[in-house]
Length: 126
Image (cartoon, rainbow, N blue to C red):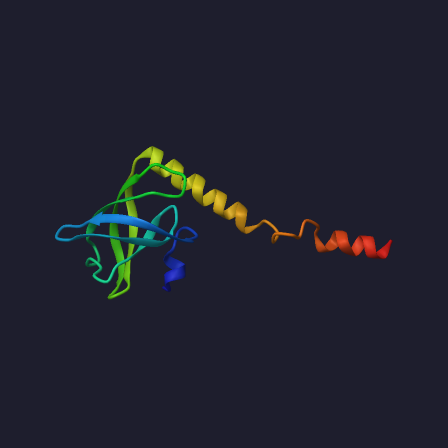
């Protein structure tokens, strides 16, 4: 089964700071993508698969979000994929809102293009 088949939610690319703590290590680094079910944490020294990790991050426009997760895959020297296991309800609501806003923004037409191609075609035919 490929990675894309295992994912339960679409990922959203972004770069935000994160502080995490595992059983034997902790670090301040960054999240490079996030979904409603997990995140990828960029780190040169990822924790082993199966490790429980606690972390704090802040989405644009939100309060700090505390969460706990489990490392589900690693790429040595690159980072680790973490599946969320626990997050307070305010944090989950902020994450859900952020992701829904990013999805809406991805469907908007490019700046400076207020009319659809169909509208332009209709004017030319008239």
